[in-house]
Image 1 (cartoon, rainbow, N blue to C red):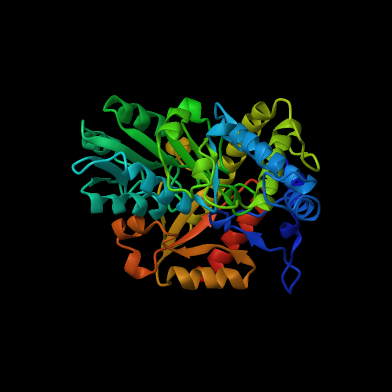
Image 2 (image 1 turned 90 degrees about the horizontal axis):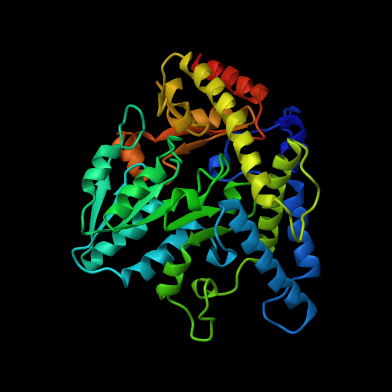
Length: 420
């Protein structure tokens, strides 16, 4: 990994404040910056291909081609068996509500759904609404000291009435990576489906839906260097069986029947470019190619290489951050701090600082050109479980592969000044 070479691909990273200091983007968990190729692809679509679908004319045919290629790119990114298992939508939350309404037709009063207190509310609220039909929602807890799911407790919730387990791949609040493959095995043993929220994990490591064995997995392109766009993968047999809400003239074939209304076509062009950018990282180890392809031989292999390299680089950077924060008086990190558990966290670190609210800390850092989040990040169940919801939540620092050790050190110096 060569972060300095990669950073030149991101125009936002070249921006500076009024003092000439480069901005430090530690706000990636809310949405990452995008490489130049993504911007160019979206502009190119709007100039050369802007049209609705299934027309006889040139721009419409180009749009159809963009959609086809975007499904291929998303399938490659997730190592899905088929592009026809990819469903696009505005964002993960909308797609999850859409699927919960669809699955409601398959459930009866007394059926059970398992959710976790470690999840973003977008993977909780859509399933809580099923209680209106008499579905019982069971809650899996996490350890407040380590931020790790209570796996034994989760397994104990599973029984012959369990129909769905909704779990996050990684916590957007505490950075914990969950053992999704194991949870999936347990759920399948009792005949339950597994719905995985991979939004927060997606920019940090390789995703392989075939290896995980889950039934559905959802993520968002704007969290892995692309445009605002949601992606849902579902097992083809389930997509063919389920009957989603749709307008009457819309196609009955999968995956089209799950996609309500006109899609974000320029966003799909950007998605292709984002996936190709990552594949280029894997192909050239830090020298991403310019532009985007119609086809990319070996793209899945390059993506796996890229995401594994990113994972290794970010692990070192994340622990540099954690060690530095542990030296600051009155600061508490919430989540994994034991290096022996390094494989079970992404480089998202949340903390509280004695004497200052999370909002005050974030505002002070913003004055130094350092961007971090504060609050609950829609992981309401997390801040409630930690007893922090009425105290302003947490300060969240999220690292991405375009961040550097120098930026981490600059942040830590700023934190020492804030601490006083």
